[in-house]
Length: 305
Length: 305
Image (cartoon, rainbow over all chains, first blue to last red):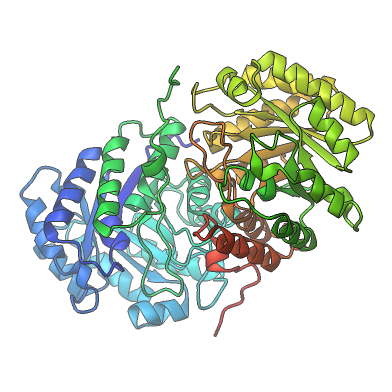
C-alpha cells in the first residue's frame, strides 16, 4: 500500500463528454464542475482548446475558465492542450494545470494529432517547456501506451522514449494513458515499473479505459506500482472519438469507492460524486456504466439490522 | 504469477439465470452447456437441486444431467446442492462434482438456508462427507465471506471457522464467495492468504459479484494470492436472489480474455464463449454486462494495418 497521498483528476467534463452528440450547456457544466470541486476531488479538467468545429462540445472551454477564475479553488482546474495555440489560449484565460500528451502508436498519432510519434512527442515537449516557463503545472501523458486499436501491441521502448523526452523537458507529472483499453494488470505493473526506473521521483499518472472491463483492476495494480495520480470520469462516461473502439473511462465514483474501501481518500464526498453522475445520466437520458451510482456506497456500511 | 494450472467453472446456467423470470427452455440450456463444454471450460454447473416451486428456473436439473450422462465429458458437469435431499437427487442422476456452501453472515444464512451460521456449516460439512464417501468431487464455499448486504462487514474469524469445518470433513476445494459483491482487492489478498495458511495444499476457489465493479480486479488479486479455481457466468449474468442487492457474476468471457492476455488458458475457445453470451443476450432480449462480448477479443490481435 502506498505511503504517498493519492490524487484524482476528474476528466468527465472533457474526455467524458467530448464524444457525446448532445451538447451540454455551459450552465450545466458549471454546475457539475462546482459540485465536483466541492466533493474534494483534486483537479477538475474543464475542457480542451481545440477547434470548435472539430469538437463542438469543447467550444465553451474559455468561458468555463473565465467563470471559475474569479472564484476560490481556481487553481484546481485543468485543461487539455494539443499545441502552442492551445497553450496560448489557456494562458489567457487562467488555466492552472496544463495536460498534454502524444501517442506511442504511429497510426493513432496521425489520426489524433496529424503527426508521427517522434514529431508529436517533440512538439508536446516544446509545449510543456513553454507552459513550465510560464510557471504552470504540467502533466504529460503517453497515449496508447498499452496497445492500439489499429496497430495492436505497442512496444514498451516506444513508450519509454517518449517519457524520456517529457522528462528532459522538465515535466514532473508523467502519465500513461490506455486510450484503447488494451492494458491488463501485469502489463500495468511492468510498464509503470519501467517508467519509475527512469526517474524514481517523477509523479506517475494513469488514465484507463474499460473496453475489456479492466479499468478498475488496472487502477489497483497502478496504485501498488507507485502511481499516485488517477484520472477518471463521472459515471464512467467517455472514450476518445479518434481511437478505433471508444469505451468509457474508469468511473470516478467506482474508483473513489474502491479507494475508500481500502481506507484511502475518505475525505472525498462520495455522495456528491454520485449525485453528479446521476444528474449526468438524467441529462443524457440513459444508463451510464458506473456501478456505485446504482448500488450506493458501502464505505462505512455497518449493516441495517 | 501462478505456476499451477488454473480452472474455470461456468455458473451461468445455474447462478447466472436462477433469478431470471424468463424460463430458459431445457433445449436452450443443453445447447449452451454443450457449447460451453466444447469451449474447453473445465466445469459447467448445470443447475441446483432445489424445490421447483422455489426456483422454477432449476426445475429441469435432473433432466439436464440425464441428457449429458450419456455423452463424452459427463464428468465435467457440476451441481449445487443445499442439503442431503439434494445430494441424493444428484447421486441418482450422475452429477460429477457437488458444489455446496454455507454463509458466514447470520442474516444471509437464515434468509438463504433457514439456519444460523454454525448449524448451516455443520450441515454442509455432513453433506460433503456423504458426497466424498460416494466417491464424488466436492467444492465447499463460504458465502458472504467478504461482507453482507444486511450485516455489513463479516469478521474473518467467522469465515475461517467455517473453512476449518470443511477441511475437517475432508473437502479439498475450498471457496470464498462474495455473495454481496463487497470484496475489495486488498481484502481478497488477505482473506485467501489466511485460508491458505490453514491448509497450504487445499485447492482455493473464488466466486465474485460485481455490485461495486470490482469482480475482475478481485479475480486478478485472487490469482496472485494462490487461487486456482475461478467461477464466472456467461455474459456476466447473475446474482443470488436471496441477498440484499443482487448483481452480476464476474463475466466468463471477460475473465478468460483477461487470463489469455496474461498468457494463461489460451486453450479455451473464447469465440465460442462470446457466441454463447450473445445468444443469451438475444434470449433475454437485453444487453448483458459483459464487455468482450461487445468489444471482441484482442488476445492475439496484431493490428489491422
